[in-house]
Length: 236
Image 1 (spheres, rainbow, N blue to C red):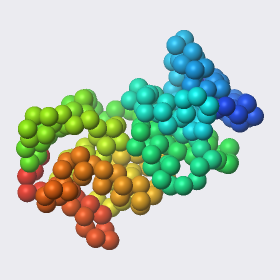
Image 2: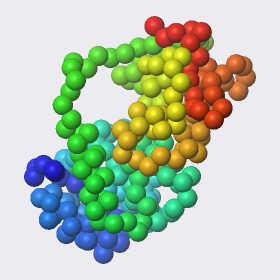
Image 3: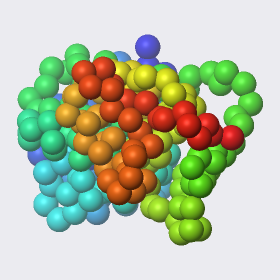
Image 4: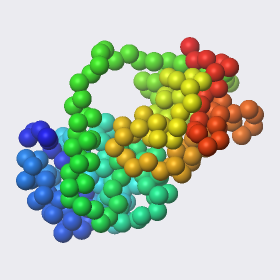
């Protein structure tokens, strides 16, 4: 069930699609706002707070990926829509901060299910007081609250929200073998489709940031099974 107070912003340059989404969601008590592009989106957000943004990728002017890169850390979940069916395109959207990704054409019921899942995650009861976590591993340090990753030489590494979430999953489970399905569920809440290639690319990019191409990788590949953080230097 979607809360009657839920407010969603649909950003799509196709008036037929955005009005169809609004009309469908209205039947479930959702207040749906509309914008044709990134400029209109910012005008709406300047005066309205929303619980979810449904964002088209292919738009004139600033496209959906650029918007996601800019707003992915705002705290408002983003459900991306795209006619691009290549998993690589979905991977990019998720790594830039999207919470979920739905390919066009889609069934309205699937859109509703994904919207419900994302809104549930927004209002899920807390399991206890939030504790900021910091880790030190092999000379590196990572602040889970600020997503600040620091090299052994003191230089900072910029992480996307998706990379930070992936690193945090490994640091919370040092030495534990994690399958691709588990990694996707732990980083995406299980709402996004699982793509083996998506996880492989995400781990590969995180390894490059950790300098693993130059030495024994901190994140180890277990062929045919998944990945694990080497436990030789357990996080503190």
